[in-house]
Length: 223
Length: 223
Image (cartoon, rainbow over all chains, first blue to last red; front, side, top):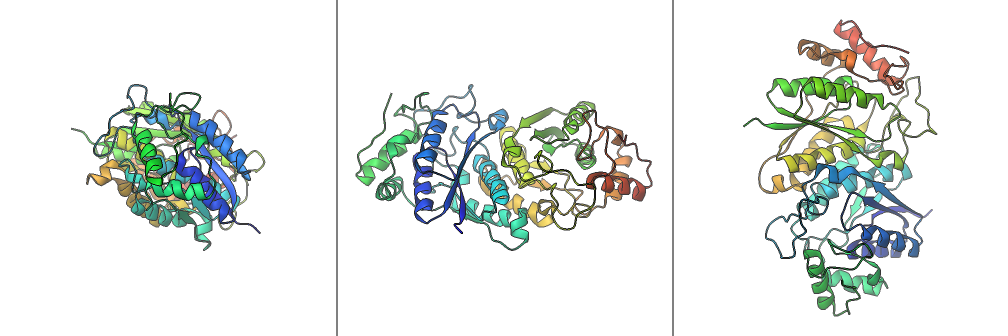
């Protein structure tokens, strides 16, 4: 029997690379995306296209009232996505986002009887978000095994973060080897509704540097 | 300045007791409820009334597509709420529910600058749910401090589970001392839309036993 894996699929560059990696490792893919009130929701269009191209076993897009708690430029109309780099934890940080996303993945894993969850977090070019660090992922894995029926019954749940120690350039090189179509991905926090990137925000800046480092031509379409 | 606390408020007997305890301890109360597709959503009517009676600083009811992942008799129309007690982890268990709820509480705590989160889980009369155990709460607290800006900046986030070692009878005794109006609470998994209890499900059974143990008359209205 093929092993099932849940992949958190935002529609960005990192998550599609993770999907391609998990597919290469022979998993049956269950892709999970969230409509959480993000302004750049063209990433969901990308996520749907990617899920279809990779012929995933199932793709769920869950509605989440994450924007209702506010506090992030990604969901709150009163806060603008900055175009200059900020030191420290930036205003685009969505409070507890990865904790919420992984919790849902965990719930779905229980329902499916899956023991593997993949997330494309990255501790090198990570914009300073606390929930992208290796110690966060480790702590979530401990929690996952205490929180669930599977854990109680001794089937270890594993949180895979295969990109965590890679630079953006290394991620793109890895994905390019796996024939990932990066033209299909949206990284920009201020992407237009048809997925055109602003070229100025932190996410665009990291992405551009990544293609330069990887010496791969950048297929991103800008506004 | 008064300290802010997030209270997970289901509208059941346990969560209102926790709210009363936190209020007594002098916290400003930020109550958080979820509309997650539970069949017994009359508990949300109770939660709203309770929040109003306790004059909380704010009450949020977040829409969550938790039912979309299925797997529980509480959200899935294909699964019936059982009326007899089941050994092991029962079909009313909602996969990763407390992990998801605490994750949202954590996000809101970050936005508000609150460092205290209260949850009414109970390890004694807990229906066999893995995410009601003390080790789960401890693991979430570790995670919370790694996942957040507050944690990174050294403001410890604390997960309070004041009922965790109490029996249902002790919880009711405690709440009765604090003048909790238990008539207002809904515990039943199969409650009617106007909040009348079935008197037969696991939650009803535990609640009835609790009032007997506490030697407090049971104000529950049955169908």
